[in-house]
Amino acid sequence: MAVIFWASAGLLVYTQLGYPVLLAALARLVPTRSARPAPAAAPPTVSLIIAAHDEESVIARKVKNALALEWPRERLEVIVCADGCSDATVARARDAGADIVLDLERSGKIPALDAGVAASRGGLLVFSDANVALEPDAIARLAEAFDDPNVGYACGQVRFVQAGEGPGADNQEGLYWRYEMAVRTLESRLCSVTAGNGGIHAARRDAYVVIDPRMDHDIYLPFHMVKRGLRAVYVPAAQGVEKMVPSIGGEFARKRRFMSHVWITVLRGGMLSPRGYGLRYSLEIVSHRALRYGAPILHLVAFVTNAVLLGRGTIYVVCFALQLAFYAAAALAGLVRLGPLLAVRYYVAMNAAIALGLWDYLTRETETHWEVAEGTR
Image (cartoon, rainbow, N blue to C red; front, side, top):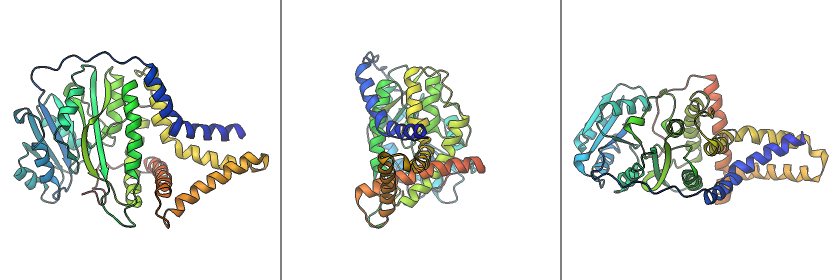
């Protein structure tokens, strides 16, 4: 029982704190990659593909943002994939100047993006969400990554801004993403990233793959590229801005839905198969994906075994008291809006969302459809 407790506690500390430290050390030891070849004389043709479901409030702004990007207009096409929209999304996208607007039947985000790829002509496929405002040089920065012929996938950085103020504006997603982006920077330097970002990411046309519509591009495409002998990289200079869900309840609901798609990708998509990875990427997948998604189980095991071991010495009493204090801090955040308490509550809520996402995956059919997250438009 003691072995199980210390193993579960140790794995939790490792995946959240030890892994980034290990990455930083390995990144210093690994030789810097050779310089990339010079870019081609002409920039690649780019297809910017946007999946949209009932986005009439933001789609015109998104199209205008896309058309204002610093990329030759003759080498850029903007494609809006309207997934069963019941509002004015299609008309407003056309009026705003999108090159192609696909008025599709409702089938889900992944099938909508597949339809956009089929209708596109660009050699570089860039994907972005309707509510993400891209910085003027975002595509240019992403495209630079593909000067390296070994790169098949690249994701940028979305900066989250708080959508509102007051007691409901207590989501700590921005804090989490700053931590996550620091880890991805190290992963990209060492080998390849283990996940992307739906707000701004890109793939070579000849490397794009049609996947199960219940899966998720952000999770599937990076490890799939690595299995094909390509790299999946993070480009922090390619930036966009997005409103985060204002409340922790809304973020919990969003993450739970998202995790039901992630679990299909992890358990059925081949992520856990080491074939084609190599040692470095296998370390990243185990540390950043398998252990991270297994954290709710590790927390439960640590709590139960610690309770059983309370009579075995002072150390177990102290550890159990620390666990109780941690969960009490998460509960207290509903009454006292202090940053550290809100961060603890966010961590507990998101681990609960991971666990319930697994429950949803195991007990009911995962929907291919998606809905607009509360307060993000």
